[in-house]
Image 1 (tube, chains in turn purple, yellow):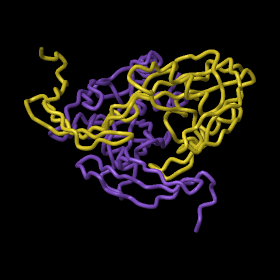
Image 2 (image 1 turned 30 degrees about the horizontal axis):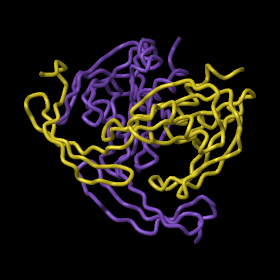
Image 3 (image 1 turned 180 degrees about the vertical axis):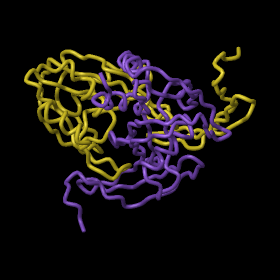
Amino acid sequence: MKNSDPLYEEVRKKERLFTGSYLHLDRLTVLQPGNREALREVVKVRDAVAILPVDADNTVHLVRQHRPAIGKTILEIPAGVLDSEAESPETCARRECEEETGIVPGKLTRLMTYAHAEGYSTGFITLFLAQELTHTGKTHFDPSEHIEQVSLSYEKLAAMVRNNEIIDSKTILSVLLAKPFIAP
Amino acid sequence: MKNSDPLYEEVRKKERLFTGSYLHLDRLTVLQPGNREALREVVKVRDAVAILPVDADNTVHLVRQHRPAIGKTILEIPAGVLDSEAESPETCARRECEEETGIVPGKLTRLMTYAHAEGYSTGFITLFLAQELTHTGKTHFDPSEHIEQVSLSYEKLAAMVRNNEIIDSKTILSVLLAKPFIAP
């Protein structure tokens, strides 16, 4: 059945160029409007979640970690990829929040789902606000994860976002989108 | 010289796994805290810009295009990658805005620069608000670009962002960040 969207590009062929441990790379041959074939390099990654945990006194709990892809150590909200296609974003959010910060969310509010690199990646991220937090103090890192926990006020974090001191999309977006939920 | 950041991961080796037309893939060997080596698959892409063009009457000008990586046709702001390492984000923003919409920005305001996939990609995007627009009506697409122009009010677009009908990070962020610049 032909797609009725005049801008639709049908995938005619998919070649696996690289199978990695974190990501895969495919080359798609797409049929464009006007019957023209074009090639698209597409990174296949698992979908992910990110969580902004906020205490009743508006303290937020973030992590600092090094990101070799950009060569920087950054302050960001807890996040991680789905364990499997079967794991729900909510389950993943509770797991990652506890693993990275030792905090169990009592209440999760879905803020948004977005494509983080629609030009070349399959990946979507779902953002959650976590409230009614229980602090267990028990984190569970992978041996290859080196993470430092950082707590600060939502207000201070929002100022860092305005000053572009926070540089990752998931943290910037969750701070902007959480604003209506933050007590004045 | 040793980096003083305790979370810093020094790159010990970089292997080029794939050289593409849009992106490259590298495998980094990094030295983690505790002298442990780890591998990181990193996508190398050119940095990009995205532009929200807003008229004096708060009409915004967007584009619809198909994104094979996510298999969807989406409404998004004009965007593109830097022509070369030498091109400034401002020059690129003026060029891409005119090419994709036929609109020449009189005034460009930098809203933010962010990493769109800090976990595995080198890419940064700089967002601009474009105002004092001149509508030339002349677009310049690449033969492989199929783009439809869509104009709507900022208010309508902001509602679509709130309802998560807009799904790409650059459009969502620019709409949220442009709010203080939009006349009531």
